[in-house]
Length: 225
Ligand SMILES: [Zn+2]
Image (cartoon, rainbow, N blue to C red; front, side):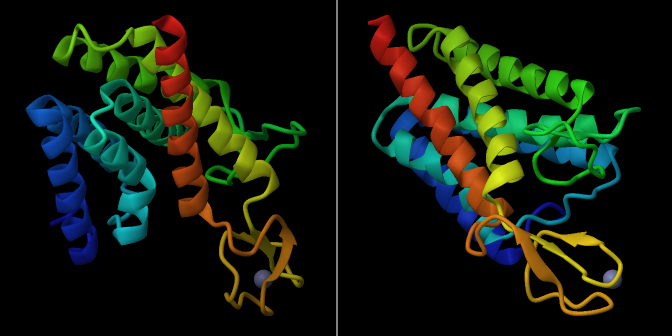
């Protein structure tokens, strides 16, 4: 399996089973749309994403699995829209001719740096949210307004960038200034934390983004009743 580690594959199976148990084949189709579109984009952009492990699968699909088990189609779709928007934004944004800027301060950062956004990547993320929302509507026309699901996806993507720019752990080599997303690494010297919380890594931020997507979808669903 090219796209998942062994543990990631088992976890993805559990997520798929939960989504199918709660929402039927339509839920599984929505999950596959997220997974396949993200994997294909990652391949097209050079496979920088690598094989997804257990933590990454939970970060992207855990919230959707729980919402699906509870039978909340709109909430599960909102969580998946957020995960799709994040993935599309990252992959499509890698083609950006302009360097990313930190969503908070506008300071230019390197491609792939957490919290960095580009116009192209943001447009790609919105397209991902709209794609997932449109498919959710096709699969279950009676369930939810696709505007709610798309909005939830965009909100999750923005939350991902905001958290990535503020509270996600960021580390730097004191000697050369190279930045890292994980502590414990040694560049020229052991890296030191310069921003954020040591316990909050990219997987944690992705999970939080899908929870924001789920929450916004739940709120939108409630308000639209
Ligand atoms: Zn260094």
